[in-house]
Image (cartoon, rainbow, N blue to C red; front, side, top):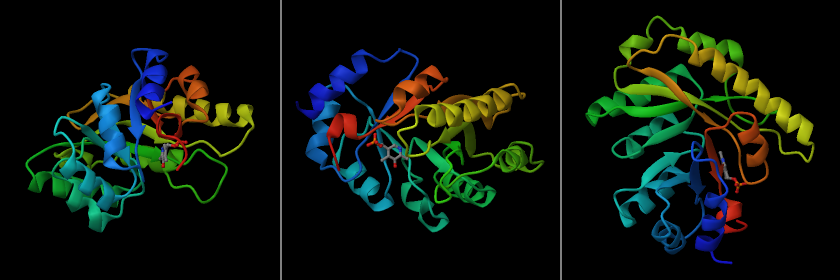
Amino acid sequence: MSAADNYRQLISKLPSYVTLVAVSKTKPVELLREVYDAGQRDFGENYVQELVDKHAQLPSDIRWHFIGHLQTNKVKYIAPFVYLIHGVDSYKLLKEINKQAAKNNRVINVLLQMHIAREETKFGLDDKELMAIVESPELHELRNICIRGLMGMASFTENEQEVRKEFQYISGLFTTIKNKPSVFNFQPSILSIGMSSDYKIAIEEGSTMIRIGTTIFGKR
Ligand SMILES: *Cc1c(COP(=O)(O)O)cnc(C)c1O
C-alpha cells in the first residue's frame, strides 16, 4: 500500500478529537507531498536541518511539529515558522524559544516533555521539575511562548501493561496541570502520547495527539 493509502486507513479509524501528526523524518519530500495531497496538514520532524529544508520545499499551510531533542543554539532556525515544539525539557530551552519567538514577532506553542519510560536514555522532566516550571514566578515574563500541554514516550517494550502504566502516569499529570488556572501563556489542552506501536493504548489513556511514522510511511 502507498503512504497515502496507509494514511487514509489510519485517519478513518481515529476519534475526531485526536490530532494525527505524520512523522516524516528521513522520508523524501515526494512522500510527504503524497500524504499532504490526501489531506494531511500536521507533519513532525526530529532534525532541525531536515525540518528547515522540507519547510522550504512544501506548501505553506503545513503545520510543522518539532518532535526531537532541541538544542538551544538551533531554536533560531525553526522559530520563524514552527507550529508546535513537543520536546521542551528545561526552563533554559523555554527561555530561548521565547527569545527567538519575540524576535520573529510571534508566539510559539510548546509541550513539556515528561520522562515516563524506564529507560534512562530518554529525555524529559520528572514531576517535580514539571511543577517547578509551571509554578515558576517568572513564567509570566515569557510572553512569546504558550505551554499547550505535555508530551511523552513510553518504554520500547512488548509489555502492554508497562506502556499503559507509563501513559496513565503522564495522563494524571496532564489532568493536574489542566486544573490549574489558565493564563495567557499556559493553556494546556494537548496530551501528545502514542506512536505506531502504542497509539491505541495511548488513546485509551487520554491522548489527544499521536505521532505516527512507520504506520504511514513504512520502516525507516
Ligand atoms: C520517530 C518518532 C515517532 C514516530 O515513531 P513511529 O514508531 O515510526 O510511529 C514519534 N515520536 C517521536 C518523538 C519520534 O522520534
